Length: 325
Length: 276
Image (cartoon, rainbow over all chains, first blue to last red; front, side, top):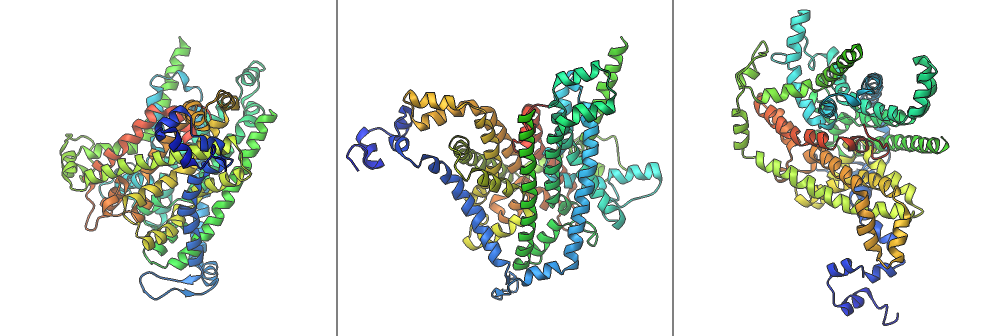
């Protein structure tokens, strides 16, 4: 090392300038001279990643091979794949998994259909008076936390003074316990999810429709193409990628659903609305069986990684498609 | 003339749809202005005399201002930390494209795809062992981590959109690397920064589960007080819940009114661009 380049600290002192002045004057020479500049930029994000993801992840991975419960106080006992085998052979886990998948299918299906229909409806709304306020009202449900919207609907679904039951009584003469009745609870929860996330699919549909080139739409109109064929041959080829991304994001998110259901029914009545997220939460923080829930969390993690890969695959497809177009 | 008439009907229909989606929220806000008797009335009372008493009660509760303050402080500081870290990383991914870029971006995105109930278990184990539970730094830095993936994704998209010529010109003219990063590139990605800032702020402001598990008395944020309030044993204090919920929802709703054009970017990790 020559005297001129010196160690970073040395170089600082020679200039006799403060850190701020140096940044301002653009004279952080040790940064400019370093071959490791790109690597330095990644240090903070890697620190966060290692401390808050990798460490807990391996902790959990290790824990999942132990029989470990916080309340019994007995030391963790190594049981190999015992927890995993127990989960795979556990009927209630499979039940929760199948409930989750049915929930995902139902919620995403309804939201997509409603969202696309309403997206078409809102497509020509650019000249609407008070559009910004109207869209704020429309998009408000998805921006609020499920912990809060779940609370709203507990009040609305309340069997005695709730407004939903009041309306049902008035128009149908019967009374429904929306969250307490085994046959209704599942639909009531689904309805809240649909209310929350249909606006998201409207937003996605609007973006998808906006990605269709104006010229092609005008050409289709001039040619007098019927609507069914306009959708199939003009709109869908352009709109499908954004739509797919939206549907996939919803799939991933509704697979994660937990706080909404926890707040509405806590998985009940019985286990009618118990999805995987609820099972996991209950086992970990009500039953305190950390080893077992760690194993279930690992499985949920693998499913999430699979979803993410599919999402990125479609994202790359859409980019390739855009470049080809 | 007939066209105008049809157009107005169309606009009215759109407004009706928007209001229908807002009705459940409106119902809660109305509940906050009712007295307890009006709120619990059977059958439901449609007309009532509005009162501000619930808000006065709310302000007098000992934990209201502390959870409000926690919510503001934790979300703002977490998002600022996340944005700094994310900008450095996004700049690196966009400009130097290290071999690990795709893999790291994938890892970052998968953090957000994991069910919260699954990722809260390991974090809980670690926080209990290290004694970080219910500390400002523990909770705040966790939320910073939580906001980083999304910010990196958004910012990388925006930085990719800025020509490398700017960087080259800056460097050739004797600017340092930091000067190029912060004085040349940063000002041009302002929309990305705003979008990332607003949406992370909303995410942290909204977060419930982690705050519930790794937080405590000192770090309670509003959604947690809302849920614990609504799960209270021996009857729920509905006027309190409705009032707190109405206070809670003001910032997010105002945010999407003023930052509506970032909504799409914000809800899709910056993977879908465009305005609505």
